[in-house]
Length: 249
Image 1 (cartoon, one colour):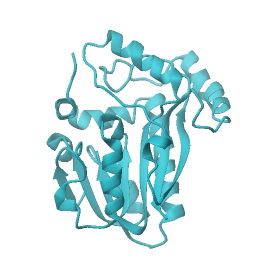
Image 2 (cartoon, one colour):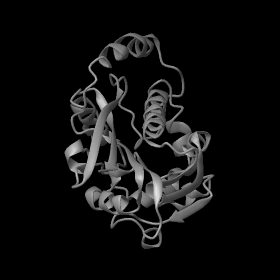
Image 3 (cartoon, one colour):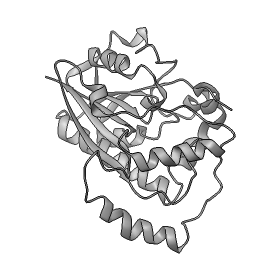
Image 4 (cartoon, helix red, strand yellow):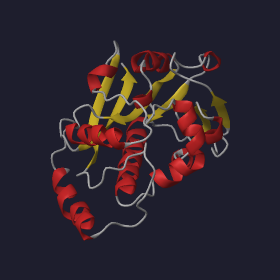
């Protein structure tokens, strides 16, 4: 059964972010990689002690505290799910669909940081949305993206298998840096979440495993995955996600 985005995230609500990021050891590895990338991108690009943030596809607000600790004083969360936003600690919230671009009400604002964390895979017109984001980005601001890596062929295969046996699924888009290249911008990309699949579970399926993993999974996480991460290229087929930054020039 094909699910629309709003139905899926309204139904998952708080459970989604709680379980997604504590789903050991895979989910936690994803969380650590994503947090490190966000923190590094902010610290290397934002020179002011305080800054503003627009979080598109914010969910229940997993990054609010992380950014506040780094100096964010004005946090605006945008999500298609009103149920997700109920749990979000942002000081400003807006429930809407961004498939056609940034909401009109935000086009008169400027943001130092614009987050698109695990949200662009659900948006078909990603380039149009990024073009809108450029318009509301402050002069020294940065757009921070974490999304599915088209070159992650191992994980794309796992996703195909999982969807074959899943009773419900979401369409997801897998992209490369070239999909986000726009005039008068500079971009960078790093591979994230490089690891061997040790299960066919993904965020679209019901969670069935809650522990730390058996001996095989522990061995993979402690010995194999660190070796794979030495190949720090977005072309690494074990790289499930990619981190992208976009700035004006």
